[in-house]
Image (spheres, rainbow, N blue to C red):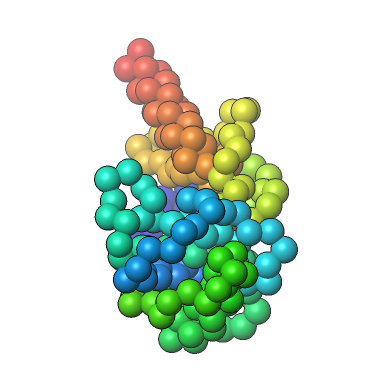
Length: 191
């Protein structure tokens, strides 16, 4: 089994990076409902943090109308959920949510599938904590230099949004910073 070299293991174990898991639920309906938005950050709901109408994306079929639902962390942490329980209980919560939004009971779903979303960063390597629920926390960007995890002797590094922030742009910046560190090290070795 592969493992990181000691210098990287020490750097990672000395860091504060921590992730949590959420549940996601994919739901489809065979008829289109008149949604007032394409996506919604749901504040104050016990179980739902985010809903996206995947069918509203460009060049997608409107029917079946497909949704992606993310649970709140509180709900995901509430108990040890089984996949079928999520598909039953989170679906019930989502259908009630849709009924409140639409003013009528939504049709019966034609497709339901749950999954674990295990990449919910709670604390990044530099100790920063997010504000808000996923995915809204991913809208920001850390403006400083993030920690670079690089072992020049082994020529191995590790990077991701978890080193510096919570967004795709943070993941990009982290990769760029690691590349700069690698090139700097290569220049020193070559000099």
